[in-house]
Length: 468
Ligand code: ADP
Ligand code: MG
Image 1 (tube, protein in one colour):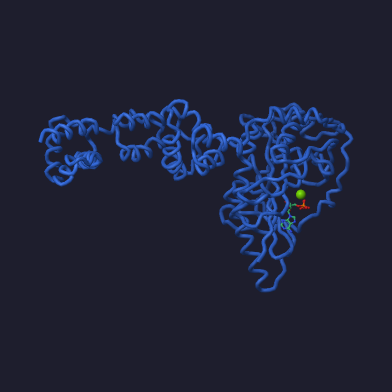
Image 2: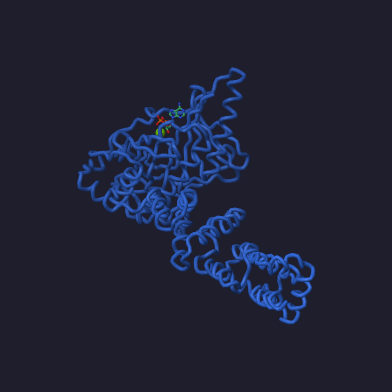
């Protein structure tokens, strides 16, 4: 069985103003349709003006994806009749996109990038009492209309849904490192995924948000198309919709072809000539990209390839968090170990990303210092992580709150008792096996229900062990 998958990724660009007017791109505190003007509402006679920054963001994406930047480009009108675009056409690039013919490596495979273009985002439609198939009515909000979008189109080079997910994760990390995209905004990365099996017709699943959902939607489609082929039914070329709750896709409409849109040149906007100087300037000011950052992590922090890759590609904020922490606590290996094996696991368990969490570098390294100073054991710290991630409370305070100190005299009794019960280990220690001390500290700590200070336990144990 051969599988072909190609994706179109739409990302909102985080310019300050919209692509063809000066309205803000941030309408989070606005009422519906308040963040609009005659241009983004598409009133007759209004004239769009191009936001240079949006174009530059498109060029940056092209350069980061190893594309050629188009020398002479223009905008086109993509005609369609739908309530999310009152002009009945979307201003986009068709014949001359910002960038073409790039590639991005996913592991050992190269995914070819066909094109990158910029366009305006349509309005947001809200389906009331149902979804796109069942809603009673639809509410339109034009606040979002005119937000710059970049569309990145790949060649159908993917061979599995999983590979697509890895691509999207890498892509979002690149976009974040470029500073062109704000992943904290709702639905700022939307994916159309095309899939065909054994040379059959391809199906397009429109408008999926969330990388996990993209993988699920494609996996479902793969099974569905295989099922059809097994009973010799043909797969229809159509556009489908992914239902994230049911994890299934359903038919929306038979697939339109690009020619159906009747693209025409938009005479309201000028033709843009991009000179070599402009491209060189952008290239020279290009921020550090994920692959470079991984290489730097390996060199600067002496981390291995795997650790560096996880830190950089999971999420830019994770890599930033790591570097912040290393400034405060100069043991990168310890920092990465606790971050990846405990903090990240705890966050994943809560389905939370580090940027939205209560975890902060200064409190995080407090915990590492407590361990280093012997104020808490590693084992106790592992338990502390959960409460720390839940509440964000300073680990120092948590430790103080949780460890109700026992009096030294009480601890001493338990120390004596523990040494009696583990006399063989005590003997080993005296014979020179220094690691045995750690074992004994653990035993005493457990016997005190972790209510004693490990430093005091250590001191008392040494006193006992050395006296006899
Ligand atoms: P459309 O008319 O749907 O825009 P395009 O040629 O622009 O068609 O391709 C859209 C997407 O579909 C691209 O990401 C491309 O890689 C993908 N695609 C093209 N052919 C196939 C195929 N046979 N199977 C899966 N995906 C495909
Ligand atoms: Mg297309």
